[in-house]
Image (tube, rainbow, N blue to C red; front, side):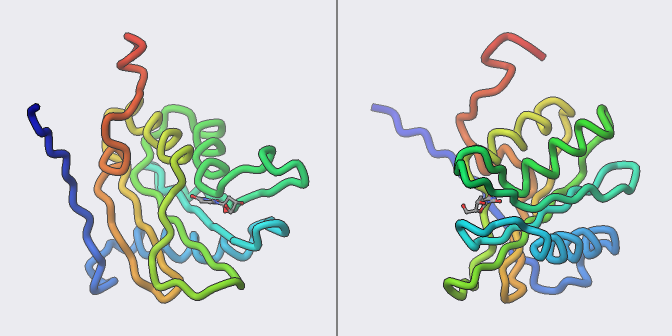
Length: 163
Ligand code: THU
């Protein structure tokens, strides 16, 4: 049996001034969007902000529903909105923040599997990396250079012989 190692690295942002002004603004926007979450069932509030190449910041927050599966994560609210309103405009970075009344976590929030799949779709489509800033409630920030790092052995349009 041959072992195949798959690895990637993330960076922890130690000094926020290392980021560009646009990236800092993006992170702040995601933190503000946490307050717009409609999450009465999980009481887990998530905010997402997506920076486009044209400088626009498209925002989203999680939207829940009494019929639980009908709700949507913050990341998908933001990225679907970006693609719907600004089709073809490159997506440079997404910042995700979260908070919950139920426990204190120092760990940055990490996108669920379905969101990784959806984010990857657009990264694959634009053939340019979509950076991710994952933000913790204590201020800890992880930088992931591209979505595909978080979803190895992914299923994409390539498998379908498309794009
Ligand atoms: N949630 C997000 O918005 N993004 C994620 O990546 C993880 C989970 C939302 C979905 C649901 O409204 C709540 O958090 C609890 O799962």
